[in-house]
Length: 67
Image (tube, rainbow, N blue to C red):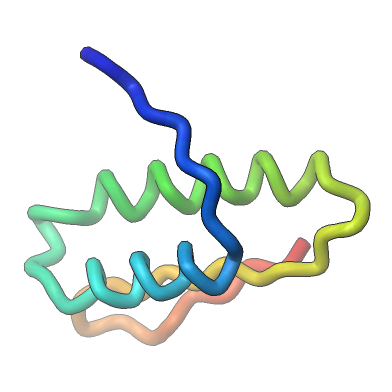
């Protein structure tokens, strides 16, 4: 499968995850997880970053992870 590397701000990633959270959980949970994992890896290796990534799942509260 072809892969893409995108450059987005933390705010943009949060907006994407929030939008995905409005879709049926079974359709998007793997994508949300993958976005969250990749963002966390990048934030943990970036000393100047103090961003927060949120993931919203169907019928769940917002999960916040801080670096």
